[in-house]
Image (cartoon, rainbow, N blue to C red; front, top):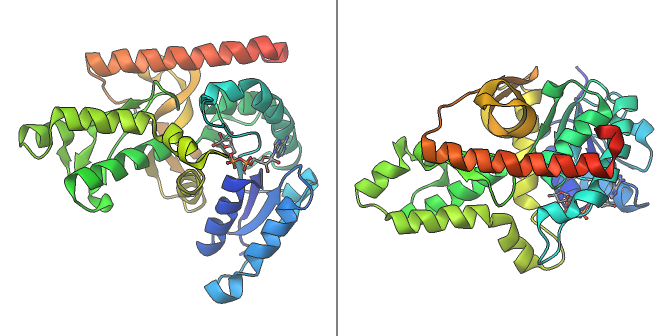
Length: 320
Ligand code: APR
């Protein structure tokens, strides 16, 4: 059977890391697309040349032509600009909206059957715009945010409790921004919910609150340290987890920015919710119950995403 084809739209920091991870995990042949001449070609060749030592097979092609993504099974979109210190994800809206238009049209023309994972920020608005511009079915267009936010939460918790990251589960819902909703009640250490761990005296509510805030600020913390760009290792790993779930029909239950119409009382919008990813794309949205406090936070996050979508419609009236 032919290897799956993975198209990476954007060959910058995240795009290059995605290609390397896809190679090492032998997920398929990789096409790196970018408007910058030489960058995707150079990264593709460099990764291919790591194959003999690492021991993977696969084709790696860098290109500036959308024709080369023809028939891709998965497209992962990082095209656009990342933030600089002091910028919020929302500051990227105008520039990256234009990028989503060209990317959406390129995917629609050459890879209309792909499962599309958007990483470009501001995430929830960009994945919505990408779905609109591409016209692909909503269950095949998804945003990567919750897996990353949850991974950050899990990492901080594992350090706090001194336990393996493997034994920490965490759920972060809502938009990928300052209003994201880390759900302590649905996050556990080896199945023990975080509020129980506070009651047991293993941590304090203050420490837990600080970890939740650090999770919300997780992207900004890295931007502040790097100064020249934003995070790329963990975002790429999170998107690869989603791509693998689709390619291998794993039915993973992962928080993703998905089209929600009916669940969570929403009437058609992209926002971070628990989803099941398998061969059908987003196969199910898991409509978990929120308590009053969680609902207030989720509603606030939903409003923030709606505001960004409204701003997109003002910038590009064809989206209205
Ligand atoms: N089509 C294709 N590629 C484009 C386009 C376009 N219209 N516009 C820009 N690019 C490319 C740039 O040439 C660059 O190589 O997108 C790439 C972006 O790479 P980086 O600047 O290194 O950014 P990265 O860290 O990979 O982040 C990309 O993901 O997490 C988000 O906020 C982040 O929106 C940003 C995106």
